[in-house]
Length: 405
Ligand code: ADP
Image 1 (cartoon, rainbow, N blue to C red):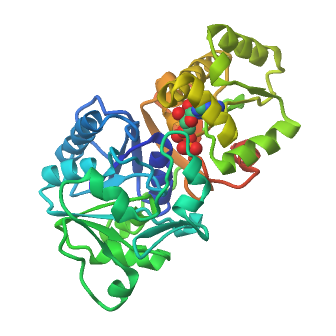
Image 2: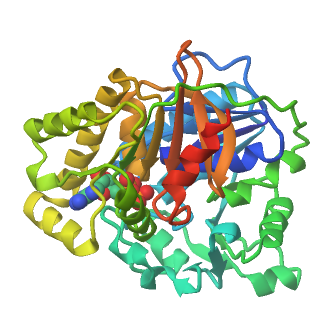
């Protein structure tokens, strides 16, 4: 193995896997901490954790175990992947996990760059933009778990880490200034060529961390050879869509899909076991070739009302547990193609389906590939979509891609 990556959620991990796979390199993705010894590994191994909103201590512990496993497997370079909208809180995990990985790799600095130009995420003067809006003026300000109310990445990171944070801004980069000396450095990047610049010009004592796009140049830089193309495995055609993301784009995707297809809304306040069983019975009642959408996706006002009634964590957990139970039941009913919207939601669903390792298939849109669990003779296909990714037709587009396999 040459490149070992740790991702803080499951959709982020498939996003990273899809972009790295573009290079033709062989990429393997593990959901959760790998249980088998490291050995016989691919050139690129990714460990996907569900640690974005976990308490710091737990996140640091799990990421350290993952980092040790990757290093023991021969990784010459580690990469810490988080969301392209820098999703975290003041007590968040991006900084503490970077510090823990640096200890393991004996690197003395970390570079942070969540930019993903293809998806409209850019960093300029240390400020993160989503399209043409500052992060805090975008819909990310209303995220149910990690509302992003500041676009200044140094200011977000500072309370998370023990040493000063500075910015390697784009003007300084263009003027030939080397990376600043502070332990934590935010890197500007507006275009893909800026990311290539960062990846190529960051000295080896610096841990690279960021969204998926900063890792894209790595296969070439590390001299990872392209493998022969494999074709996506055939997966039984029964499908279901599960959406627990409340992001603005997901709301539009849900609105469009439910106009033409069977759909069922679940709401945290009424989501007891009876309601879950009613939902599962409803899925059973549909023709087997129908592709139902189950969604908790709701407007910011409605999410706030649920959170006021139940608490932020509890509202999220109730929905995630329900999605997990519905996913298991759907699998028992013969569903093998799962389209899932939402990072936390995807984590809950993948764990419920007991999927711990996948290979990477075709991309549906930038940052969302189909992935396939092939350990059993009855493979499962997953499309795990981060909240704001994809266009309004995403659900139909994802299903259509598998039609010709
Ligand atoms: P995204 O990728 O858009 O960030 P996530 O699944 O990571 O989506 O996060 C959305 C969170 O919001 C999840 O924890 C989910 O359970 C929770 N959630 C979903 N629907 C609701 C709702 N109606 N009210 C409150 N919380 C919700």
